Amino acid sequence: MKVGMTYDLRAAYLAEGYGEEETAEFDRTETIEALDDALRVLGHDTDRIGHARQLVSRLALGDRWDLVFNIAEGLRGFGREAQVPGILEAFQIPYTFSDPLTSSITLHKALTKRILRDHKIPTTSFCEVSGPDGPDQVDLPFPLFVKPVAEGTSKGIDSTSRVTSQAELRQACERIWAEFEQPALVEPFLPGGEFTVGITGTGRAASAIGTLGIKLRKGAEDHSCTYVNKEQCEDLCQYALAPRSISGDAEAMALAAWRALGCRDGGRVDLRGDEHGNLFILEVNPLPGLHPTHSDLPILCTAAGMTYVELIDRIVTSARQRILNQFRGDIRVSVAPVLSA
Image 1 (cartoon, rainbow, N blue to C red):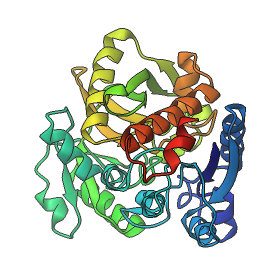
Image 2 (cartoon, rainbow, N blue to C red):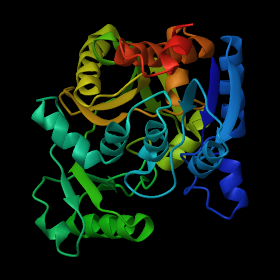
Image 3 (cartoon, rainbow, N blue to C red):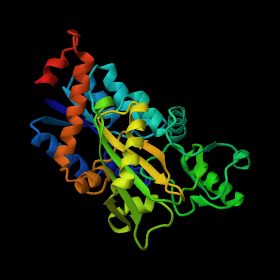
Image 4 (cartoon, helix red, strand yellow):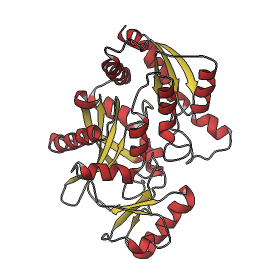
């Protein structure tokens, strides 16, 4: 297949003057090279397109692809991860990962938690705090945890995110409002272990790759996978597959959340335990980082014995299969014969 690649290259944004944390979710050059290499190993012809505006320019020139492998995060707004999928749907070009609706909902952690709650999937109580009176209206017991409602890569999370008083809560919320111009998500702090479940596939065909436990090394910021801990994970975090006593429940919960939210092809679900060991889903990541040695999903795959090429193959295979299922019997769509080749 001719596979286009859409992505936000971090180095390009840094060269334009954007900041380190502002571009933390974007992809390093070695991620694009690794993904390109993997797709070629799988027998595909690749075409590096770039971000959403570059995609629009290429489409205007008449360029088309059998499939677009999309890992573009977008720059602004709650719908930023839906921009490339929306453009591709307008041109009926198949793409990997979730559709615009799921991409928007899962970026917004409060909306995600409301859907999980409706499906009776364990997630903590929460408050979405957006105004000067908001912190005073939070009716949850301390200690609490405060983070932006719609950021990834632990942006906005540091050692002050765990708060134990009303004054600390207000200060943490005000920092989120000032730095990210969005509401703060306030939840009970969970003191137990932190885990991420890797998933590939869609709907009933989705399956868990494994459950990765994440522990903080000496010198890491306290309490959680903060932005600094995540950026320096090679030195500050320790990863190991979770024992079956934990992974069984974690993977069942993660798959239930994955299907409830309509996630597709591949990604991660993050969970954390309370003081009794009960697990709760923190967030769902249907557009996972794919750096071969720095991102959680490839790290999990390596621990589980799956190569990077096998991971990319699983994602492409899932996309191809669901597209064939979607278009089965629809002779108007010309991409189906190509995808079945």
